[in-house]
Image (cartoon, rainbow, N blue to C red; front, side):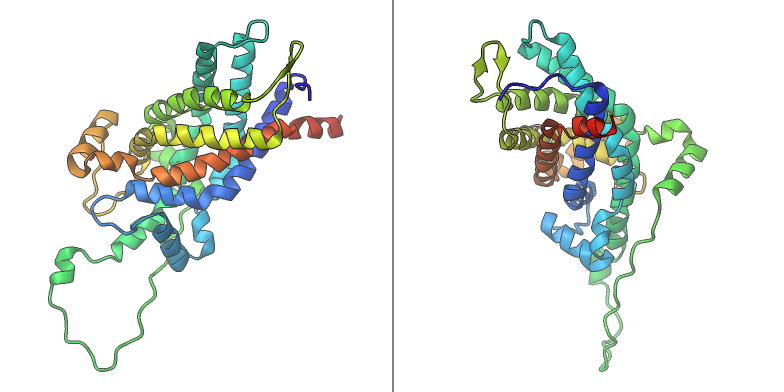
Length: 325
């Protein structure tokens, strides 16, 4: 099958937006577990991803796994649209006679990662506060070693029924936004922008060239026209490239998550910047802390980008514009 003609920018934006909405809806609970695991310091509320999800459902209900999903779904459309469309635009600009060298692929990914930060930073800021609220509430209900060792009152012969944990207080993205704008101005929404850029640029520099090469495996040229990859190959290439890039930048994601978390639990560190955060994590928790949530992150990013690339290459945007036209 011959390669389809170059899509228009509106079609690229629609494809990226639809892909983001579908992908985030599918993998958001795992992303919530990733955030909570990465923020754990000292008191270990969760033993791993499955334990985190089980405790979240038990204490907050099924929809507790989707805390922060509204802001993510609202902003993921422009974020994914910018990322995927910018990469395509940069690739076209850097191509010569239909050929793009590896350095051009890396540079296009760098440009895409840089462009998306304008939306990604406030989106992640708000999402992290909402996702982590349940962990902080659960942590307050876990006794410290000193409290556990302290003598308590004699047990009653008639034990009262066990109290159900109180659900964490519900905050909204709107209230957090208003509070940040009042107290810190627009810069409050862009807290951790440097760390976000430090994570997203390397991610895109790894992901897009790797995806392009995986997606081109086995393709044959008919004359000067490159055959188009089948849907399943684009999907698997997106999953494979996404998981590799996600694990590779997990240490940077841990730093970003810690810097963007405004509310800390008892005894948890606050950080003055990227260098201070890196130093404190290394001193207090060791090198393994930089890989917290790596499995969750791979499980989030792999299907997210597999779905994204599948939808993108199916040409949903072109179909929509064709119906509207």
